Length: 140
Image (cartoon, rainbow, N blue to C red; front, side):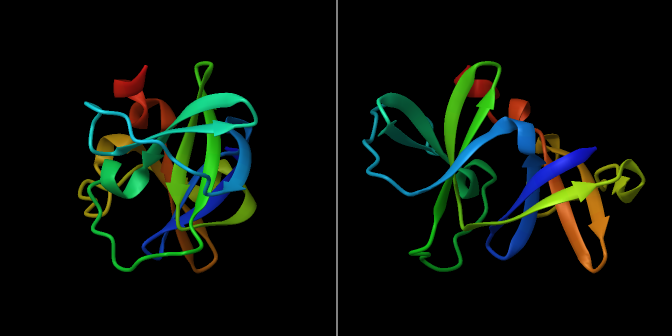
């Protein structure tokens, strides 16, 4: 598998390949855009580039447990599309060996299963490995 960036949503850990993450930023001013899906928070200007912003909790239909003043923005790229993903915290850069990855479980209650490529076991941690292409499909 290789290196991944681990992040949290409502205390659960997820990960995306490090080569798809351009930056991790503080949350900037987001401008709402009419007639977009509910999970699209809007757009923001990041160093002269306007990028769409996705609320992963809304995209995954996860209830927000508490208001988080420390949310971060992960800037990711998929098929030449740059997108900001709102996450609770970006926690680690990890190296995951292929033998530590299992296919996604049949029933996953936290995230729609089509967004998950697998589950990584690291010591006492379980990380859901996300497929950004499937998460961002309606945007491209």
